[in-house]
Length: 344
Image (cartoon, rainbow, N blue to C red; front, side):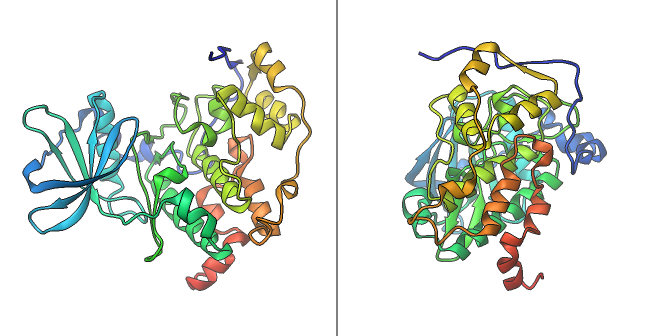
């Protein structure tokens, strides 16, 4: 049975603002972020044929398809019945991000003439199953390379005033043979407006930032950086997922057992959050567990001082302390990638 606690109570402490790109949508024209008034330009469903099913999510079924006009492969995402507003948000965000580095490209939007079921048509990526096939085979350099590729997508979307809000291995498509990476599934993505309060029921449990778990609603792009930190820790320490909570409350406990409770309570205090007494009892008191404690014979070839420092600078309770995507790209952990790309 699910335990029900109210998470935390917020006093009139400081409201939180993004450290970067805070005013992007303040400076953008209304039509850039006003997705509710988007007029969808529907293409023709007859131009596409389903080939085989490749996946399913909470909100959609995903197929490999073919564009019958040019015989090119594509991905067809058939949306399950959901609020029109949510569909419009995903389409508007994908349109705004079109052509950005490592962002999956939306090619067309079509709907069934009878059922009116909408489908999103995307570029095709020949994906390797990340967790089963790819994770265990990645070299130290591969991990650094793909993290840089994810950061390019994140810095781009953040610079465009958009938070992804569901960064996890499942939403990273990799064609390892071509070293091609795409950040997919923008269905939970949202426009960042300074001071706005957002729904905390986003992201997947193992990748949820502490802000979501304590009900801090004025979060920002830095949420994505926590999720990336969880992914990276999982890859480096070969422990997937890195924080393995059985529900949202347990997820917070698992985080506190690693990062310690002293800095957790300092974080709550900074933002004027008071934890529900039952949840406080559940969290308890824990000292910080150094990341070096996770090193073993299975993962030591992937662990370095820079990797641990990088993870430490992403996995911070206080979202304002986390590296931004742009700062992360300049971290020593990614120096070998920058050197190869000639950007030293």
